Image (cartoon, rainbow over all chains, first blue to last red):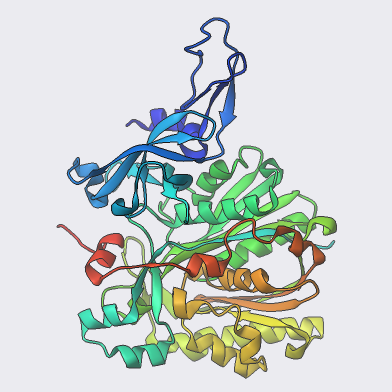
Length: 131
Length: 349
């Protein structure tokens, strides 16, 4: 990923900023300029999600690209935020504990880096709520 | 002008390694090491955690405790000796991640284990002079100890963040005064591009830690005209469990006074987070009116002493974010191989 592209998406990645359509009430992540439901009638505003939600589906990754080799095995999930938007994210807990329906909350972690001398990408991952 | 703590927050990674596990790899006697260091296990960062993520996590706990309007923060200072970049501030990452930027100033601090308390002092000056409304001071580290070095048994990961303000009505604790004692004492250092720090062995004790901690503490007691018995609790920088106990004894503080803040036996030394973590653990249980005496120490060398008085306001913000005890609970233990992986100690050449 290029540095400018990451920088442009920083608010979404750091602080879970997405969009809310004031016309239909739908929430979107990441930021959208146009509501896909309301089209030209949509009235979009930026919205910072609370960072809480539940796992809709999940998988465990054992084989991946070099960039993520340090993390395997790791759990990936589609999380439905409490406001309704869905996103794909890593769940930082032990993979065997990750399951559909479990409650999660956002945490701030390293997402990757451009080698040893490049930029470090930070952003949001999710963690299981304590039971 | 009255200055003090508007809020505080801590963060400790979930992973731990026991002293026995490290000793097993290097042929050390775990019982001797545990008795000598009084450290039984230490925290280890996850693979995707570093000083910046820990600083952000602690800072978010601080702002969430009181539901702070983060646009009021006029300065963010992060103290660490493991900033992820040699050139590029950790504090800008923190500021962006807590929603404090852009109308503010920021910088990174480094002074071995007392960079976080130095950040608190700078924020005290800025809010005390009225230059800013609130300051965010953080101490966070993923500290390094070379394999088979004495430091490997204690170098841990964690951090604590403090929001410093000047409006008496919103302070959960007043910082009554501060005093520092600083000399050029080379007891611990890390040169540019080196992975691990070096230290002067036993030299780090008397000329380093004990001289500076006791001088800083005595200086503040003298400046304020207070005595150890005037305080309910005391916190001293905790590179291991033995040093703060001895420093407390030398100064006339009791074991009971330092007990709530002495988290190092189950946490290890979180370097820039060490003393600030002890203060956080003490604030977690302190009652309105309690007085806390704290002295941070940083190799190189210097100490920052603080006299803190807890206000009634603290009771309003209990249970909003995890306490230090809650962060220490329910750890995941690693074997040495996993620990080496988490710490990036394996070099593939």
